Amino acid sequence: MKANHPAKGNRIVVLNRWSDGFAAYQRYIDHAANKIAYVCTPNSVAALDTSRIAHVEQLSDILDEEALHAAVRACSSALGGIDRLVALSEFDLLAAARLRNSFNIPGDLPETVVRFRNKAVTTNTIAAAGLRVPRFAALEDLVVAKAATTTVMRFPIIVKPRSGTANIGSRRIETRPEFDALWPTLPLAEYDCEEYIDGPVYHVDGFLLNGTLVIARASRYISTYLQFAQGKPLGSVMLDPSPLNEALTAFSVKCLRALDFRNGPFHLEIVRGCDGLYFLKVGARVGEGEIPFLFHDLYGVDLFALWAAQQSGDKARLATQVQAALDASASSARGGFLMLPEPVGKVFVDAKLLREIPALYEAVFPKPRHFFDGTGGYATLLARFRYRAASEHEIATGIHTTLDNFQYTLAEIAAPPFTAEPAAPMVHPGRHSPPLLPC
Image 1 (cartoon, rainbow, N blue to C red):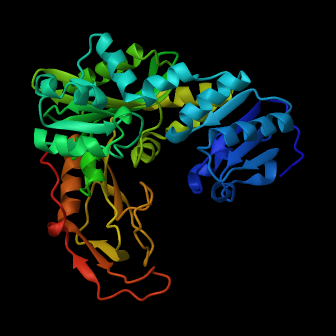
Image 2 (image 1 turned 180 degrees about the vertical axis):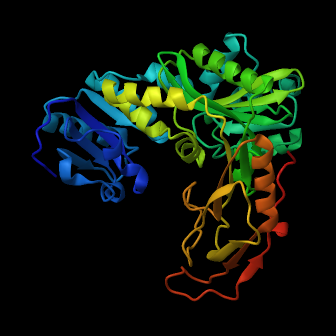
Image 3 (image 1 turned 90 degrees about the horizontal axis):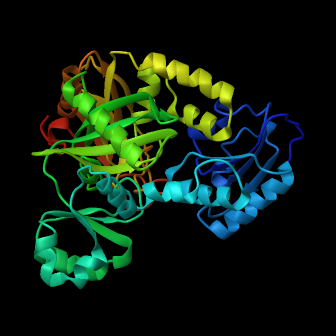
């Protein structure tokens, strides 16, 4: 696919797997001043504005790195070389780093990205810097030393894939017999386990430029992503200014420096144990779910735009956006979110709130008759709610009030929803929703 729009700026390749509004890269990259090529899936290419795109390569599987390498080679031929490569999905970061290495493109290289994509490498690096981490081990090491397992790791433990995202495949194991039953079913070399630290869990999200914070917000989870993956609601509340808020931000910066991370967005999770703060996980990417929406709605900061400007080498655009984010970082506004997971196998009929909630400013529901097939990710959930107010307490109150007053109707189906009428609907008042952990 060609469009003859000569550009004087950089020659940029974009890896795009998104087929929704996130694929509007023209918001982030000047397609008139630069020469842009895309590598997409057939679904995601339909979401692009192709009027100023120089070249497009389509791949049925963007995770096929051999095919991806060939596609980028074709883009390089079409562009006359590649100056920058942009990848904004966590699933593409390591492949993008390998491509930069192969094509001699500036930006994050494999030795940088692997420190974030491989949980064992991440945790070892942070522990070596003298920061607290849960006791952890490769699953294969524990199995080899089964007799000593209980001296190495205390139950409960968290078993998780070594490379992954959003706690997909992670599970909490309560007892040694449960562990002994699980480990033969897993590819041991691909899993780690870590000690479960009891305490409230927090996340810190923001953006670094040359090792300095541009903007950051610390938030407290109400429930966790691990529990969300198990079908429970997930909430989060931005913290008021406090010594704890400052400690969480400072701890995050120490972790990022230990990982030699200097430029880009980050999402870092921390648990406050009885003896202090413990590192849990980190992603060198924009936080998932409602996090980017909150930064945009509360502070006017588009973390994806910042990231794209940094990756694409647009110094002027990056400088403007960084200054706006620095100005916004002083804002006293606080926000939060609530996400209700997909009721897999059901059809969405309708939903409503039984009362007005002052802190709630946005509620997102699926379209009527949407079939929950378990592939909605964070985009098509049972419900997504966003909150803003002047204090942490107002946000937390709004989240709990939402749970108490949210009513939704689902239907059973005997076949895919486009071929069968739903059976009698089931009405679920909010009081029957799975309870969240207390604030």
